[in-house]
Length: 135
Length: 173
Image (tube, rainbow over all chains, first blue to last red; front, top):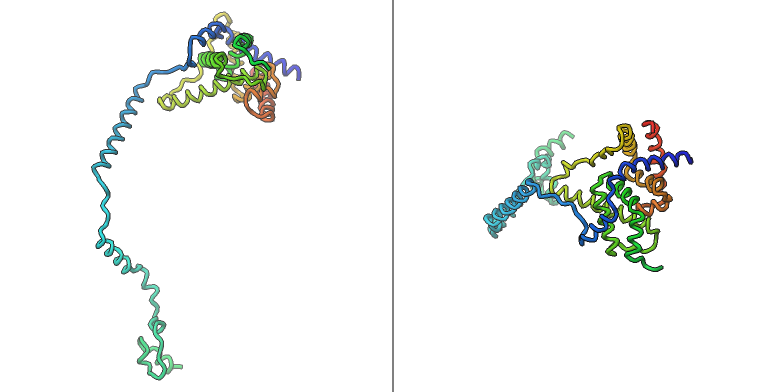
């Protein structure tokens, strides 16, 4: 364990030895720090692409504003048109509506009255009569 | 406890100057110019009283912690600036260490191997190991400097040590 510790201590020592000659002098750094009132920040000159990008963004923004101004407010539907729309919605039928229309469905929507013949019952009676005869 | 005066701090900073530079270098991933700027910022903030020492840790631990935070803040700021300025894609890698002209080829080669070995572990493992083995801190102190839990620091220490020793053996160091 001690060997490992010594080995790693030596490793880090050797690693930093190469950097020591370039270490800034303490006094020089303090003088520089005293001379500065704000922390040093390395700044780079604005690259050309940024200027181009800024201009492009400004142009796009101006174009958007202009487009909105030219379009004006969105038109709202009048009352007549609203009624027409509502009616058309009420008349609408599903394309598969015929699948729900079963044979003799009309018998289910009306009831026979007592004391009257088959004529009072809505729908085609021939099928029913034939069925009774065969039975 | 008496608050430390500017003169006290100047003495502490001078005593720890080389160690502070080495630590700043580690926090800046080997960028010497950046390490120098970080150190200057830290000295300025400490001497101007902007970085306040509350006595919870030793001055060294606190100073190293301030260096780490300053380096981290500058790196984040640099990253944001880089993205905003469109430089992130063409960021230059950390400059390779210039060989010491006084040192021979063999020494330069050895330094290169040492640096290669160092890259085999994560930045956090490197920081923990450096604090423990180079700056003679305990794992608890290293954890305080890095702002992480002791358990986490211990894990970084164990894993990093194992990996680094293995790599040093591979490199024949």
